[in-house]
Length: 125
Image (cartoon, rainbow, N blue to C red; front, top):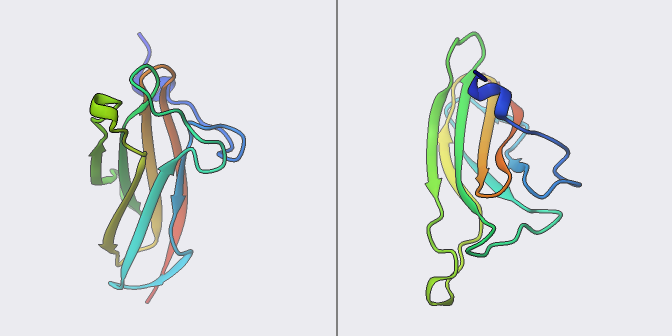
């Protein structure tokens, strides 16, 4: 049996429309509120139809030296054409961090499965 980690796909978000794109400042001050923006289809637009869509995005933070990540948020996209309403897979959250670490993002496409990306963030004391 495969582990979930073996099912995660990744790639260069500039050439692959399923990879979540993480936008964060590279350097922040300890406990300063920052904005984390995650989107799917930034360079190459992802279809958002009933037949082919991003169902959700999850965002995690793994502080340096920690064994397990902290889930910052789960964002579900539930409008896929009902009454002509379509969600765009873009999320924003605000956090305060006191340690450097890594932000991870997962996205789920109903046709192409799980996709991941990560970005390091440096916290200055």
